[in-house]
Structures are given as C-alpha cells and as structure tokens.
Length: 332
Image (cartoon, rainbow, N blue to C red; front, side, top):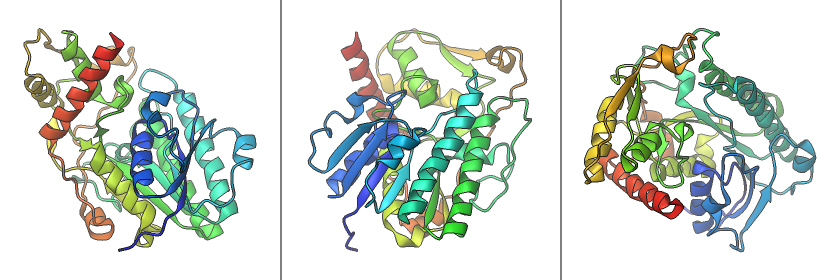
C-alpha cells in the first residue's frame, strides 16, 4: 500500500508519545508541525528533529485560540496528543479544563479545515467495568464522582463524545484511540509516566518501591513502538475513520510482579524492597477506587488497522530500563 505524503499537526509533540510519533512520521516522509507548551514535554525529547527540513516546532498551548488561529490552513490531519493526566493528588480542575477546552479548540480547527482528527484517549475510560477484556463497544463504568482519579477518565470520555459529535455535525473524519499503558524511551520519569517509570527510578537509586494496595491489580503495558504503529495506522488508513480502537498489548501482569521483573532485569544488586501503601494513605484520607484488571480486546485494531503488539514485556522493559539508567547517569 502506497501512503500519500501528508502534512500533519501534532499537539503535545515534545511529550512521550508525541516525540516518538514525530520520529515515525518524519522517517516516513511526511511534513509535520508540532505544538507543545513544554509544561510536561521537553525539547530534549525532540532535539534530534528540530533541524529536520520537514518539521516546524511551535512552543505554544492548545488553549491559546490566538495561536491556533494563526496556524497554517493546509493540514491533512491533526493528531491531538496533548492532555493533562490523572489527578490522583489534585489538579482535577486542570485535568477537566485543559482536556475539554484543548480538544474543543483543536476540533474547531479540524472543522474549519475539514481535515481528519485523531484523538488520544485512554483505557481509563473503561473505569471499573467487569467485562474483561475491554471491547470498544463495551460499557464504560466510571466510579464515585467524589473520587478524584475519575476526573481524567471523565475528561477523556467527554473528549470522545465531543469528537464524535463534531464528526456527525460537521462531516469530517475522526478516529479515537484508547491507549493501554504505553512505556519506553522518553517516558516521563514520575507517576505521570506510569508505575514502571517510578519503579525503575527506585531500583536505580536503592529506594523502596511504592505499590498501592496489595499489588494484585493487573495491567497490560505496551512498548512505545507498538503504540506508535497503532497511531500511525489510524492516521493514515481511511478505514479507521469514524472508529474507536484499543491500542495495547495483551501480556497481563500484576503490579507486584512488574516490580519483581524490573528488579530481575536490572541485573544488579539492589536494596530496593517493595512497600505496600494502603489506598487511604495515597488519597489523603479521601475515598480511592482502583481498577483491578485492565486488559484490551485488540481484535478490532488487528482487523482494521493491521497492527499487533510485537515487543514482549520483558524485552520492552529491558530497553526502557537501559534508557532510563542512561538518562539518570546524565543527570547525576
């Protein structure tokens, strides 16, 4: 299949997924304009692309309508990756406002240009659904509104509904991608980046590994290259238009076993021991609800997008560990 070269706008381009997706699109010969306010992203993530002849970087915010109005008017597709994440320790207002208003602004641009719009969503939208594996047409079961963690899931569900409503009312194609635990080079090194980021940091620095609850909750983690192949296929294939896709791997692991595996991968003596932290301690006395299993049904992505995760969890974590170790040494 010959892919037509496109002009792509990527929001959140200096973040984890944005920077990796940028490399993929430039390697495939597309022209890219990237926006990032660098609040969580980093110029370090895109330093090797800044001088590329087909890339233009704009430091700016998706909430800035003046900036958006000044953008070019010949984009073929907008890939909206910019977002504010899980408000477990506060910032629920930022999560709800940035995600909803930022998506609305970018959808307005897509409406004006009549161009394709690819929305980054999250497996969090399935909430506490007991229907495992999660299917795209399955139920989304969000917990108690007084639990702050659900603000992120609700913001992304709103984004999904808004995008689909725009597609119906204004007749331009939309694709929604629900990511499952992406990890790898350029991942954020805090909880924002996921438990693997924090666990690796603890192992490298001989600190206790904090695990919430009893550690028996399970997740599937997706190596970034596999996630990027999913985003790229959804961006390029017209068959994806109007659809919602899970983008993830199927290798389920408990969080406790994840910590054990990372200690094994380190290949070095470490004094890091697991510390189980009761939920009431991480939520400052407020109610906390966890998702005990999070596993995708990837049938639809395999059938329509033609993609399937290729990297085993152990291999992906090994690469990621070495990358994070190198970054830590550079900062030391």
